[in-house]
Length: 134
Figure 1 (cartoon, rainbow, N blue to C red):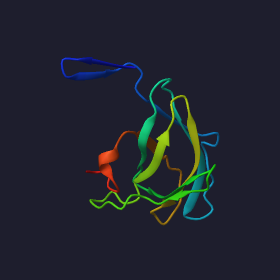
Figure 2 (tube, rainbow, N blue to C red):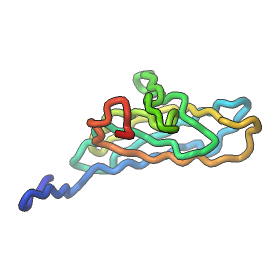
Figure 3 (spheres, rainbow, N blue to C red):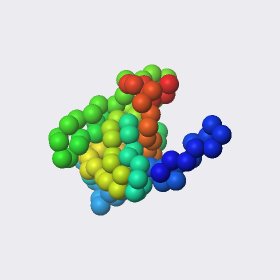
């Protein structure tokens, strides 16, 4: 539902991403690690269009995102400014819906020690095209 007031648009049930996994720990036997993740839109009314995820890790970068249902592979966005391998396109997630992916990352250091991978999500970023840093 959308309410308008003097030039403002208020969304009563704006989309919200929740990123989860049943496998929070992955053993790395080489420099590449893969996690199953689920991205859920908890809004009951609004789809989350043009979604992206951002990988917030100094030691890891995204290699690809694989849609489990369609087997579609998304490579990281082709952006510069030191963000290569950080942004991966998710696409649309319907209201009260979810999509399952494999997130593939690669370590950037010689030795693979314990590390944490933080992932954040954005939606409705159509203006980004192939560069979410615009």
